[in-house]
Image (cartoon, rainbow, N blue to C red):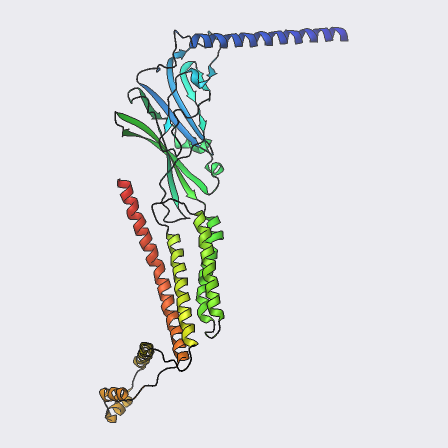
Length: 424
């Protein structure tokens, strides 16, 4: 009983293997015959265009590599599936059939005659050809970095067929809805490095050459710079270091620590700006607001070094040294202005007004008396303490006022330059 079961099982296995070999050999023979029929030299020549004119549909997907999908029809490469055991498509080397020669016009490197050489082409029985060349591209694009590192950029890949006239080869974009990209492409997964891909778009454009009109397909990428790295490594430390410059005025004038402190802060700012310069785009047409603000901060820090040296030098001068008259004049005028403001703020009652009239002395007489009385000069330490407080107010006002002025100026210049470059 068991021997008969084993014999029947062995026979079934042999029949299955025989059928599989027969089917495989028949399918291989059909594919071979199909290749021989399609690429017969008397019937097909890869140097001859499929039709005149012909339309090539192009699509693109952006990842770390550039995947370019091209579709076109060639009536010479059609066959009936019933004649070749339901073979619906085959793959052939790209050099065996005609295909559009696309070049990247805005490539940084030397133009390639055919992007994606070596990738096979899929041929369907209805004469439709699909080619998905994969190539690493390095293109250039104009960058608007006024708001760096919180900027958005638009970059394009410009494709064109330069060897054939527009009447011979016409480039079209594949008709795919936005829902197709949402379902098939996850932009968050392909966003890498310092950039996040927001969206992609494409359109067709014509341009003139010396001989005729050409068509160009522009595939655009909307990018957003990821600014977290710059905030934590550059911006936040620079803001804290810039805030430390104001602490210079709170250190005692007679101490030599003040000049050493401000020089240390300036050195720290220079180091931070050097690190920030390494992360900035090396070539750009527009100024960055953040870089301009950091430059202003560094300039104000150098100004504070000069102020500190001036105040400390005045404070440490010997008593026999008399300061220039303009210093005494500024101190007196400032204190007189301060007293006048206090007097205006204080209300005078009628009794005080009557007493002032009975006094019989006019304001002009008082001024004449003051002019005739010799004024005692201020000491160098008094002048240093006054100018230390006075220059602290001036420095704070200048620093705060310079920030919005710098932002407005840089934004205006960048906007104007962007408009002019767009018109050109």
